[in-house]
Length: 251
Image 1 (cartoon, one colour):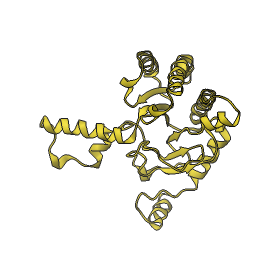
Image 2 (cartoon, helix red, strand yellow):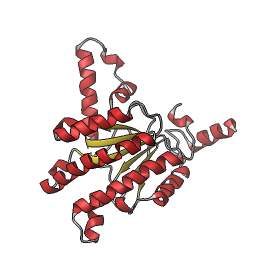
Image 3 (tube, one colour):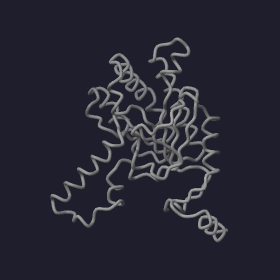
């Protein structure tokens, strides 16, 4: 199914920048690590809610390639939370029929975390329900550069000619190429930035920004975002008249 043929009021693929954990904790005079732990609860809930609402794929930004510049104490806490959360949630994800995949440069992570990441992917690889992608040590620019490297290797090996390089080819090399295009991009926490997340993949996504801090983002918040998405006319370069005419013809 092409992008412009999908007219469901429920997005097939939702991407989320989960922002505001630190500020949530600060408002409560708690350490930032407490905010990240509260954020885990919000993530657990959105996975379940997306599955219940009929969303096919959910991609969440857990740790950007720029987050290494945060205080070492916070980075260490995040690594620890990653490990403990994946271990504790693995069985539930299997029972919920959720398939988990990670994108990003995982080799920079501690060996213990890499092991748990690999185990989580393996344990859920045969699930057929919601596709949950966790972006960790990920950056949109890194993603595009890696795709260019793959194409360059094929050029050097004589497997490709210069004339064969186009948008479709590059789309096949970037992360998430096996999933439906992203329909709805959500950023919590009151910021109106993309922050180097899925730069190629969100070219035609609807961008939804909310002041809600991530630990407070619940089912009502998600339903509000999806309801807003349902009001958008997705034209993909066409005019309103063309889209409305095609819709009328199909009815």
